Image (cartoon, rainbow, N blue to C red; front, side, top):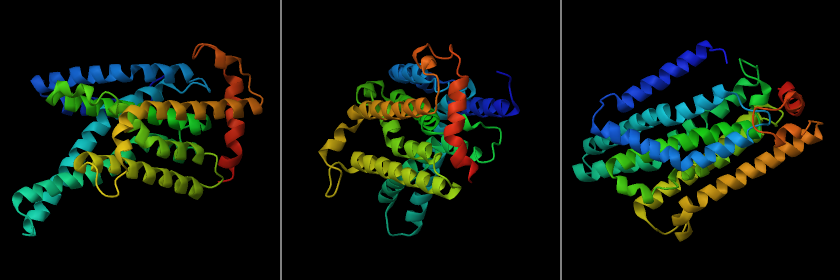
Length: 311
C-alpha cells in the first residue's frame, strides 16, 4: 500500500491525539493505556470476525487503520473537550443567571453534557467516516464505488464504534479498574446505539438522489442519538415515568447479539445481491484477502452504478 498525503495527515492527527491522551506519562496515563489494552481484548473476537467476513471484496487496509485510529484517539479527544466545554459553558451561564446556586448549576452542566452533547457529538463522529465515503462516492474524489454500500458502511462504522467504546472504557478503568465487570459489553453498546445510523448510511448508497441519501442518513442519525440519549438519561435518573423501562437496563448484555444480527443480515444481503449480479461466490469461502475478487468488484460496481450515476 503506497502512502498518500492523506495517510500522513491521518497519521499526524492520530499521533497528536495519542500525545494529548498519554503525553504526561504519569500513572494515570499508564493505567489508561493498560485499560485500553484490556478493553480492546474484549472486542478482539468481534474485530477478528469482521476481518474474516470482510471479502465482499475486502476493505482496504487504509480504511481499517484509519477507522480504528479515529475511534480510539481522535474521537476520544474531541468528545472529551466538547463534553467539558458544554459542561463548563452551561454551568457558567446557569450561575450568571442567578437562578441556580453553584451546586445546582454544576449538576445542570453535567446533565447537558451527558444527555445533549455526548449523544449528539459522539454519534456524529461515529458515523462521520462512512458518511464522508457516501458523499465522496458522488464525484469519486479519491474514493471507489465499492467502498460505499451496506457492508462497507457497517464495517467501517463498527470499527470506529468498537474502538471508541474501548477507549471510553479505558477512561473508567483508569479511575476504578474494579468497574470493568459493569462495563464489559459497553463497547458493543456504543456499536448498538449506532446501528440505525450505519444501516441508514449504508443503504442510502442505493437511493437514486443525493438528497434522499442525506435524508435517510439523517433519519438514522436521529434514531441513534435518541437511543444514546435515552440510555444516558436512564443512567442518570434510573426509571422515571415514560422511561424505556427495566428492559433497557439489560441493553449492554443484548448489544453484542444486536450487532451479530445486523452484521449477519447485511452480509447475507450483500452476498445474495452479488450472486444475482453473476459474481463468482468461491472467494467468499476462502481465507480473507487470498482469493481473486475481480468478479466481486465488477458486481459491486454494477449494483451501485445505476443509483450513483443518476445523481
